[in-house]
Length: 477
Image (cartoon, rainbow, N blue to C red; front, side, top):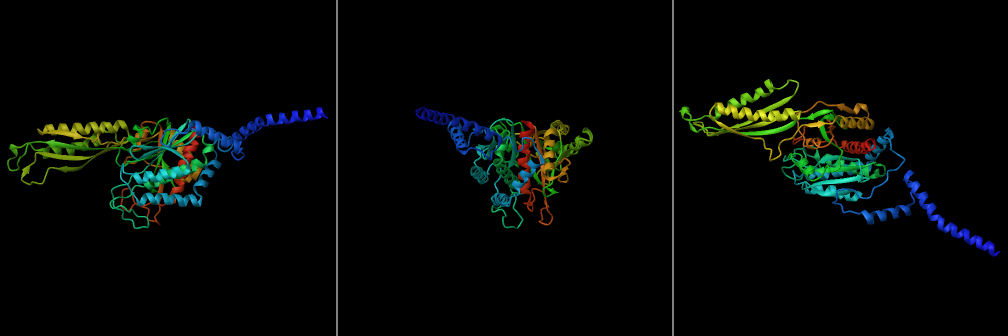
């Protein structure tokens, strides 16, 4: 009997000491195969240890606790993965929330580097989702992250600034700030990226790397992207994507192209100096009006006679000022304009030739000239050139998500975008999403006081962002 008792005690002790090992092994295996059957006591222990050892405040640059992607789900991207992302975006509560975020931003437009309330709203939403971020970058910008905290790193960017335009659209959520308006759709861009953040956070256990979310100020001012880059927005980033709403395409149509999509854009201001004199005695003066006129005519020859006709370029003189005295030849004449090109080589060649033509033409008429290209004010935008592989990634995602009829290869445009600065640092792709809806009146071009969007685009844009990022991590990990 005593031996039987001893044997029972032995087995009892053996069970007590071996059971935790069995539980730990079982839980570890379960976590790696299914997120729906996690041992919650072990999960809590893991998170507690991770938080105590690796916690960081929200203003640090990288995520801390590395989450292990689930071994079930979207290890290889399939149509089912696209459908799952789109279903999350189209949930009625998500759509209502997206519209609410966009309308709050639209009612309170803020100009370049003044996006204080917009940035506060974004950070409020990120805090609610438990998403870490670094703030500020470029004065009001935000760099947030979702995922493992490790490579690969892919970025998605939204611009936040409004324009100095008085809104002429009469609707419930019209701009409440006189003389300021979201007339280029940046309010929608922010809402779509916040929406993508929500989708990605709900699928964080599936992410096989880290998604960086960039909320950028001052796209319209031309130096928001440059300052974001200088402040570390692209640290570790291997590729970046961004979208712009377009009135040229029906709602939810995605459009892009490989290579040059948007032109490089620059501005110039020339001061041609001569000698003031009476108009009745021109021989006593040195006439800058004549020199400026010759310069304007000669500038047209740069595109028409010096460039390949298949390499689209523009030089336009848009202003000339010699004063308003009808009886005097002025001391100086100021002329200015813009120039555009689709490649960096052509763009900077234009810049050089504009300077040479104005200075040399002035000298022919005994005048002197200086030319300012506003480089210190960062008013030079390089061309926006899509990386071929990143464009192809956008195309695949759009077709899988929305179907082949909802993707279009679009022609290049002479407009400019400061997203171009990112494209000079890492492989990138920029794409459009349509907002044209004639029934709603969403037909006006950007920078119009009548500009508006079809808000049905918001969940589609959010889903596209999320799918681009998640799929990139899977296929480039």
